[in-house]
Length: 79
Image 1 (spheres, rainbow, N blue to C red):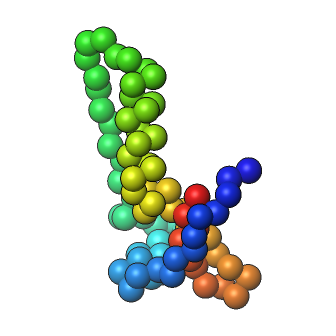
Image 2: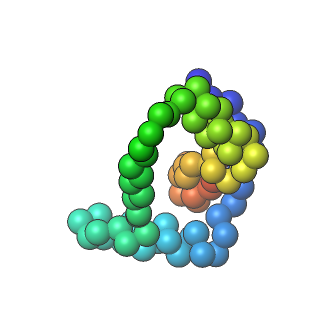
């Protein structure tokens, strides 16, 4: 189980994005994007994992997930 570090309110822009994402469940979510990288050459998996963990440790916003409270409000839960 993941412990919560903090709970943040949504910014006005995030509130708008959540509204549009929930407005039509059958529509494409234009705010969702995906990035794919192709790496070439030797890859040190332990080094890549350490680098990714350092990035997450440094930037709390990258550890945030969106949760809906019983009140209906959406918040950011920071792991």
